[in-house]
Length: 139
Image (cartoon, rainbow, N blue to C red; front, side, top):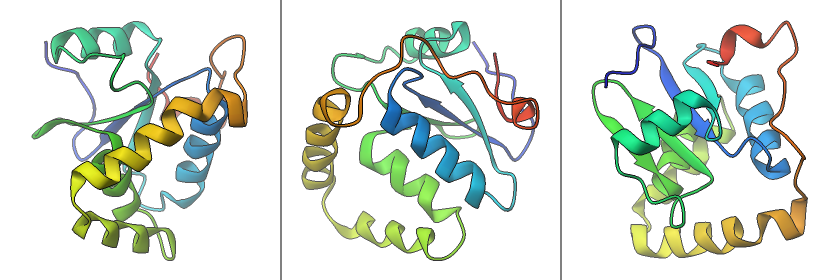
């Protein structure tokens, strides 16, 4: 399966019912000055297809995935930091944390991901983008 997204775009898959994830998507949209990112919930048909295609265990990786057509999928802290590197100052400074070994970054990431519903809450269903933002979402 080849995910059809426009050239020079990257697709962020996120947990559509997670309040932290939805807030993160809004944060990215506000700072994505080069219009690099598109979004789809993990719960969407497209999200499920990508998860299946790349054999992703959603019990281990369930909050953010970054799909770059030429490069494939990255996840967890590496995905978050790659996204940050495309955002404007000061958010792009976060990408400096890529020097921290992935096993340490992912331990912190997993701790937050494991507790995200308890700390930030959960919606009944996926976020519905406003008409102005609809073009940034696939499915």
